[in-house]
Image 1 (cartoon, rainbow, N blue to C red):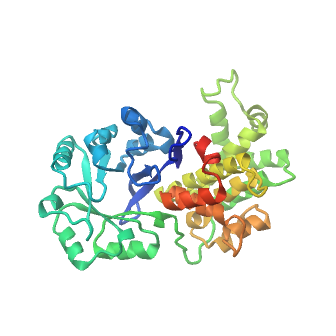
Image 2: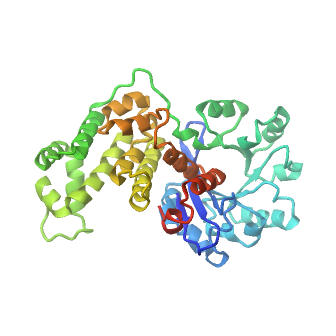
Image 3: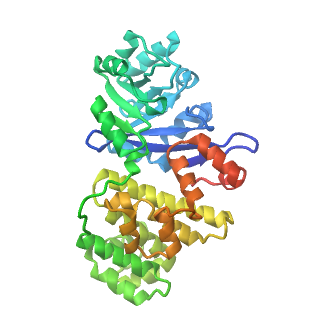
Length: 402
């Protein structure tokens, strides 16, 4: 999630990216969501800077995603398409999603045909409200349906199935909706459902997971014993190897190789070491599969966002460090495939934070979770309402790029 800095008095602009999964729950690509509390991206980047701004958005991880062979889906209105904004994306990776109601103009159709000839893919929205002609159905590389408009009727599904285009369903919120959409014949799925936990019966932690959680407990202990932590890191071959490799890299340029964990702690400093260890341990806990790794990255982003929020806004006196841990562990049930009731018993957290992670009734952190979810899911109306309620629209969000 990110926000462009805007002059005072102009609408706040937010954008975020959300993974698109295939029927096997592998990441096919990402959809970039954003705008001035609306769906299109045309206003995110000034017209004269759109190509440079969109393509160089390293803070959104777009370049890294494209290097992994992932598609980038971006919704454009007629103005954006005709101005050439989609050319900010490389043809091999870019998917131009035409916003509902924008396709019928002849010049739009001609522009999309030209873009397809250049290698771009097009995604056209189908619904009862915005029917596509038979010709347009066969012009699309992807036919997209949004569950926010309700369930697709059999006639619409039949018509979609008569084309060779891939079928994308947007706005999938739950595992049940994901499975139902698979039965309808959709092959690509976008929405917050990927964050919902899938509990595995008789799930037991492996030795690697137990070791990482033990290191977390040492790391977050109030009466931290650095010698004990140093010994624990040294006994973990993987973590100690990566730490020493990190410090001995050209990035630091030390004249002599760092050969011990004690040296590493002294040279790197406790604050930087703690941040590095938190990230490494958490990514290790997620394993090597794509979706858990995506959830781990999102968790680290959540932690940093809440930490910044707690630092700059005196929100009920919350401790920024505690808010970081709250965001960091907020998706652990989905990452580990265990209920949050079980997860919190493994975590080095105080009771009220464990209650917040369990979503106990009347917990004081509920509005922060709602804020995170509206940012991640591109739910700009809810975000607008929350920022107005919390009186943050002109403060924290006007000055930060989380």
